[in-house]
Amino acid sequence: MNIQIGHDPALVESKKRLISGTYLHNAWYVAAWSSDLAAGKLLGLTILKEPVVIYRMADGKVGALEDRCAHRFAPLSMGKIVGTDRVQCPYHGLEYDTAGVCVLNPHGNKHIPPRARVKSYPVTEKHQAIWIWMGDKAPDHSTIPDFSVMDNVPALHSTKLDKIMVKANYELVIDNLLDLSHTSYLHEGILGNSETVESVISVDHDGDDVVVSRYAQSAKPPGMNVLMWPDVPAKVDKFTEMRWMAPSTMRLISGVCVPGASKESGSGYHAIHLLTPETDETTHYFFTAVRFGVFSKGDELNKQIQEKVAATRRFAFEEQDAPVIEAQQRIIDASQTAVDPVTLAIDVGPVRYKQVLKKLISAEQAP
Ligand code: FES
Ligand SMILES: [Fe+2]
Image (cartoon, rainbow, N blue to C red; front, side, top):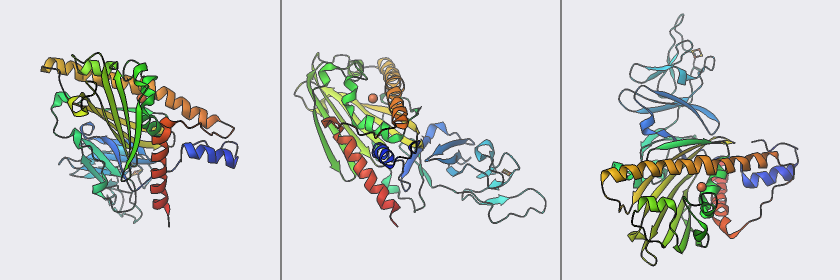
């Protein structure tokens, strides 16, 4: 993060209140969708500023190593998998096992220096994604965020497993997602409209989760809801409930129902947002959606809806959210005076999650 510009401590401090510039390491982050890693494939990427290669072995298991050969730092992701589970460096052929230990030096007397090893990362697959544990503590599988809404759903009721890169710090993306008041403006017509501005907002803590709910009464349904519910009434109650789960995944329930009716009787989707910091100023953004209250009939119609929902959401994130968030990042970076945002009632969710995240990071960094 370029927050050192000017070397003014007050300026740097003010920027750190917006973007902490630190990470929770002992946590699970999404490295890829499972379907994006075929057997025999190596995928190099950066997570929390560390070069990582994830790969799938012939038996389907996934491994993750530091993507930097101990010899001359060639990226292992440019190499290949040999035997059942070894990664061979593309440059001089050193081979590493899944623990990151060099087990073959094909040259000379074949001696393997003890330092010939790379870091290995715990990795697991759940909810159609590959999760990587970035810390040094033993991985805690019970802390993989709950995305079971993605499991065992009819194929036509869930959308493409998609991804974009955002050129901004992941905290700015979380700020965006935890404050859905922006849908009435930035996504006007698609995800919100002028009639959904007036909403009752509530914020709850569920353990370390922060849940922000909005409820707009008797409003014109946004385009996305009209698309998914062909006979949607002219006026609906619109509800959204966004749950942030540390460190950086979010699960949204977004739907509409007949005014005054229960949310359960309505139609909408569970929106899945999985954010993985790449660097201080870039974020891997994985997303998909799973419908509930599916009133549209027939596979052909549901296939059309599936494709339109996926395309519309990608458009909203890539063409509407990302440009604003990336511009925010540039403005914060360039600011030569302290950045002290005006806080509104709609900001309570972002303020609360930052408190929890800061608490978790401080606890991790405590001696
Ligand atoms: S750089 Fe990997 S074997 Fe030489
Ligand atoms: Fe948005």
